[in-house]
Length: 394
Ligand code: PLP
Image 1 (cartoon, rainbow, N blue to C red):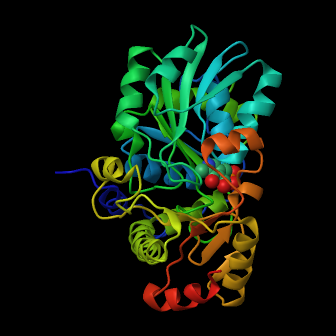
Image 2: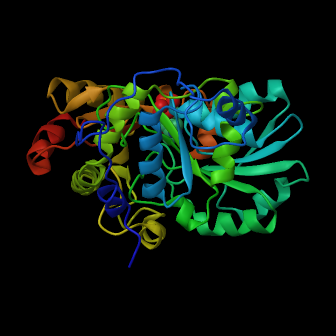
C-alpha cells in the first residue's frame, strides 16, 4: 500500500493517565529516579527511555515527536521552540568550524540571514546556488562540504526542488540532504524521497492557528540521539526545545492537518486560476503554467493538492501595496507575514519575509517589489471570496 502521512497520524493513538483521549500534559521540568545508579546510567547515555530533564525530553513533547516521525516516515524527531531553532540546531549539529554548506538561492529570508551573516562568525561558510543546476552544485562542492540545504517548495516563488535528484548527488558525495518542508506538510514526504533530515516551522500549517512559534527536525535515530546528547548535543546544550504545553496543543492540531491541507490547496487552486485569467503573472505549482507543476505531481502524496500558498505579480510596488490594503478592508484576510493560518494572510515578500536577502540576490531569484504572497485560508466558498478579491485588483 502507498505511504499516506494522514493514515500514519490517524493510527497514532495514545491515552492519557486517566484514559483521557488526549495524552496527559506533563507539567514537569525534572523527573525522579528510584535508584541513584539509574540516574548515573542515563547521564552516561547507557540507559535510554527514562526522562531526566525537560530540556532533553518531556513526555508530552515526546508524543509529538513520535507522531511527526510517523507522518514523515522517519525514525525519530525533536521539537523546537521555533522553526529557526530547528534549522539552526540541525545545521550546528552537522557542521563544525571550517565546514561548508551548499544552499538553494531561494530560501526563507531568516534562513538566508543565518547562513550568510551569522554562521560565518563561527567559521561555517555557505555557497548559495541554483540547485536546479547540477554543474553549479558540483563546482561548489569541496572536501569541506557537509550538507546541501533546500526548501522542498521555495519561498516566495514556489519553485519545486527535485529532491530525489539532490538525494542521489548527496549520496554520491557523502553529504547530508536537509530539507525545509514548511510549505508542504502531507503533500511531500522528503525523507521518503531521499532526504536525511526534514525540518519544519510548525508555526505555519502544522499548527495552523497562528497562536504559537514552534519547529521540528525529523530524521534517523542516530541524528536525534546526537542532538540530545548530554555532553555535546546542540539540542541539549543550547536549550532550543519546545515546551510541553505547546507540544500538546500542536499534537491535537496535527490530527486535522490532512483536512486543512486539502482545503488550503483546493482554495489556492481556485484563486490561482481566477488570478491567472485576469492576465496577471501567478506563481502556483498547481497551475500548468508553473515550471514545477509536473515535477510536484510526480513527487507528491496523493490527495493533498499543490499547497496553500501562491504569489502574484501586481506590476508595481504601488499596485501591490494598494491591493493588500484593499484586501484587508474587504475582510479577505490580514496584511501579515507568516502562512498556514486558517484565515488568509498576505504580504509583499520583497519588503518582509525575503528582505534579509540583498537586493542583488533578490533580483537573481526573480523577487521584486510588485509581488504579493498569499497564504490562502480555509474559506467555505472560495468563489464567493473571489468576488471580494476581484474588487481589490488595481
Ligand atoms: N522556514 C520557512 C520556509 C519559513 O517560512 C519560516 C518562517 O517564516 C521559517 C522556516 C522560520 O520559522 P519560525 O518563524 O517558526 O522560526
